[in-house]
Image (cartoon, rainbow, N blue to C red):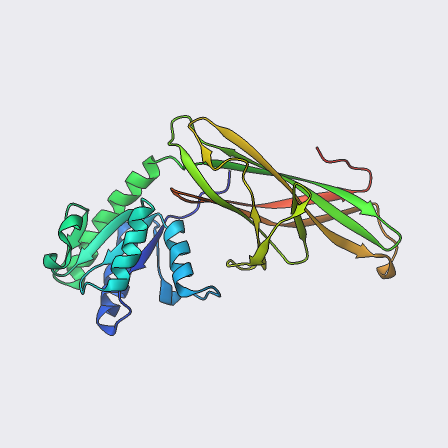
Length: 284
């Protein structure tokens, strides 16, 4: 399993000067006061290559908590909040006027604040509660990745082939989970194939990786206690003969990142690995 990652809160609010103190002192200050380790982020603090809406979708997918300020009934905020609710995200609503919260959202957990300091105190309590609830919820899936290497030599070069195996488990005490996509991240030096077919890819949305490869799961839904396995291969030239004599062994090290997109959010797996490529190795 990947190392425990910090909890993330993504903030939906207008990008207006009148909200700067609300964000910097009220919301970020509350996260600091809560001592939960929850990381607060907002779209305008990030650098990204994809479209703004696509980035918002991805940040909502990745977030553990959504904090949405509805104080001025901003249409964009309501639209983004609707997406978060459709993804069954844990949402905390904010407003400086209770009349700004629509009738069908008033049963949702919300904070009415009279000042920035009032917001800071109330939200800190809510973030502590949110982290407790989230930590008590099991991850929708458990992931494990294994990698083995093989070396092939020709008269021109030595090529390394890495065979990956991804095991996806749905806990027996969890909930059925829909899988919409699986992404493997790597550099553009690698050719990635699944079932002997080159995997489609686009530019990466996460640095330092340069390509994001789309893998096809064998099923779209995992029931409780179910397990599936996905295999793919990544290959690249490790050395050219004009650079010197080809060796019988090479190795490559780096961080492997796999992200499984589900109806319950994004499940990441990342860990540093070292793959050894030996000329007489056969991966299993």
